[in-house]
Amino acid sequence: MSQQTIAPDGEQAPPQPPPRARGRAGDSSPARSFSRGFLVKLALVAIVNALALYGLLTAISVQQWALAASMVVAIVAVNWAYFSRRALAAKYLLPGLAFLFVYVIFTACYTAYVAFTNYGDGHNSTKQDAIEAILAQNEQRVEGSQAYPLAVVSQDGELGFAVVRDGQAEVGTAEQPLEPADGATVEGDRVTALPGWDVLDFAAVAGQQDAIVALRVPVSDEAADGSLRTQDASTAYVYESVLEYDAAADTMTDTSTGVVYTPDDHGSFRADDGTALTPGWKVTVGFENFTRAFTDERLRGPFVEVFLWTFAFALLSVLTTFVLGLFLAVVFNDPRVRGRKVLRSLLILPYAFPAFLSALVWKGMLNESSGFVNEVLLRGADVGWLTDPWLAKGSIIAVNLWLGFPYMFLVCTGALQSIPGDVLESARMDGASAWRVQRSIVLPLLMVSVAPLLVASFAFNFNNFALIYMLTGGGPNFVGTPVVVGHTDILISMVYSVAFESGLKQYGFASALSILIFIVVGAISWWGFRRTRRLEEL
Image (cartoon, rainbow, N blue to C red):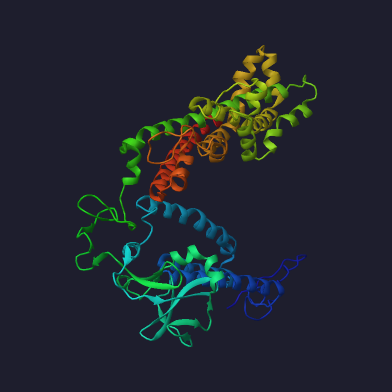
């Protein structure tokens, strides 16, 4: 028996919700309608898919399977996020996650991988590539080999050789071994015309003489078959390598001397007397790059000095700029100072100029022979502001003080103005002196908001590459080190020098130093931020 609810007299039944329109849920979703916004989204996703597909095909062509897998994941994720009704949050998170993966996670992981290898000049490819390069670089003209009348040809700016071998016209380039040239016109024993190619005349050959002499066209896909080379652009000869690779024994033998080269643990073919063939190949070397700075006698001393100078530079930079900025902030926060707005504006002018430009200006002013400081202020003195190790370090601290104090001045000014005035007034009414107010009230309250910024400033100056590179370039340099490193180098500028400016690029060693810098900065920042939390409890 059913029960009925009877509304009391004078009360009306609550209004019933309007009936829902029948139909499939989600018919009004933007993802199901072909509105203008949906079409714009469709076009943008299509562009992303096209770029990702291009990257996928490129990665497959160079056999970078990890990158190819990443591209597949990216394509699936983008299409799922932007065409699914259940992935509203992913639509906003996906772009940020993609940039986070590319610029942070991938970069960090790849740097860590390189740090454990010998990747660098002479060891930047696979073993097979190294074998082919060694065979090609040790070629000599085959004694008594046939001379081939040569036609130098060009296709889209790429040079090639066209010759007649065994009655067949053939053409090849540095990247493409000789292959039959269909439709070639041969007069006598020389190719005079070739469809799709331009046969260079004397003037064109003279204009590219160096490139033609350096050109090497492989005879076949086998590196041991040698290559065609020329010295006069009219006759080519077969050159073959004096080294012979034995795949079964994995050795390289010099056929002219009989010396046998065997592979070592560092990716090189090395003879018994220690002579190594170049180039080598990339191999894993474990923690060797991490310990090299401490175990290499030629590098240990400069590295320790650079390590200590990096800490000193970061600490002094933070300390000097903070003290000067705080002093000026306290002075110009006093209402008795007239023209404070104008003076404050003048004080932050150095902050308005790009730091690297200011560093270049100071570099010119501190020039030993023609700088403004020596020539005008010191009346022709001969002071090596940037060439003496200690004066150069002092100049860097001074210039960084010029560049950094406006930032600290602005930060301290804002923090001072946030301190409640009634707190200061109460302290004065209790008889506290001006110094006691500053020491016991103003400074602790100011440090609560400024301390995290000081930690961040330390981390920034620990890696202040631009100032060092623009002002001194790391110099003056140490003598006798295997890498170019100077007395004013900090760790990050040393990493740059190792990676790019030391003649022989050593990416593995530079990556290991980068990881050490990251660990040091991370540990100091972690410790600093933990300390700043205690200030908030005061």
